Image 1: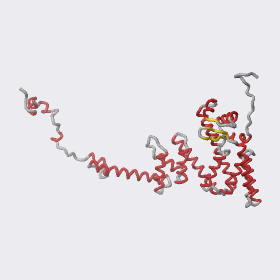
Image 2: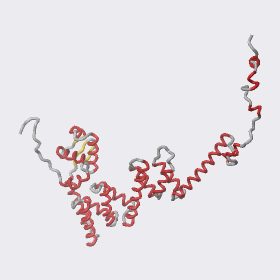
Image 3: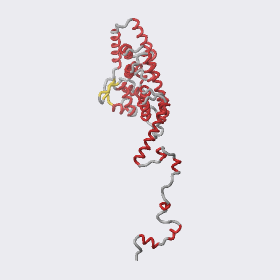
Image 4: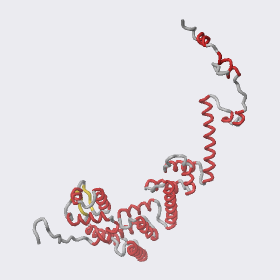
Amino acid sequence: MQTGEHRFIVSQTSLPDIFVIRYAGSLSASAIYVYLWINSFYQDKSFDRKNIYDAALRSRKEIDEALAELVQNDLLVNSGNSYHMTDIIAREVEDYIRFNNAKGQSGELNDEEMLQRNTLAESIQNTFFQGKMAYSFYSLIDKCLFEYKFEQTVVYNFFQEGLDRGIVRKIGDMKNLARKWYEKGIVTSAVLSEYKKTEKDIQSVAKHMGSLMHRRINELDLERIEKWVVTLHCSQDLIDYAYRCNEYRGDIQMKHVEDKLVKWTSSGITTVEEARKFEEETHKENKRKSVKRKARYSGAVTGAEAGIVSSDDEDTKPKTTTPEEDKPAFGTSGDDDNVDISDIFEMFGGEDD
């Protein structure tokens, strides 16, 4: 082997199987690359961002995003300005111990209930984790069944939702989702069915609004749309009409649409036809108010504006000026063209000597 700066890299670095089974599938390529590099050099010691920057693995922006992703997935621990790797093997053992302790404390379950729980867990493991599910997810299943009181079909659909959202292998995100379902009362099949229908309506409206506004719908937009569908009970047709009513604006914002919907629903309006009549009456009322304001500040309005006579009648109104009043101050034709210049000087005090 050569000495000096040229050396063969022949060392081997162990990588726990649990990383491949539980984490790798849900990580970005940059996060996996950064994690493998850290695993090679910093298994048992801390490091900071500069250590990673200096290695020039990726751009600084990509490294920052990768580190944040690894922290979010509990693969790294951030302690101020430094990081260190999580012992994922030790954590798996602890999860296993907690799982078995929880099983031992489930004496209130009869044999049939235990069989149903184990069958459900096995089904979820085979469907969503290719037969190898971390023990922390077994604990989550128990939490959903016995603490949140989810029906078994709801638990299975909960993991399907996690798969659809791309978070099924992220235990933290799945715990947050389970809590949200519990807070929304999604614990029975009937409520789940209604929730699925509502979610479908929200996605349909989001797609339609994105098409109308020619841009991508973000999380804040989705929160507004969920309010329109769930809280205000607005149909997609009514939401579409609220957008159309704002087309006179140069740049239509979600808030403009929401203002219309809030105004209509607070007046008991639920259909497009009712909203159209409401807008027509509002337009007429605004026009009457405009006429009154004009009369108040200008002192007079025409008969047509006040609704007394038509605009055609205004054209036939007799003139109030006399022929003399219509004459100009100085003549421009006839005898006035022959006026003497001395007469003009006399008007201004006479002609200079």
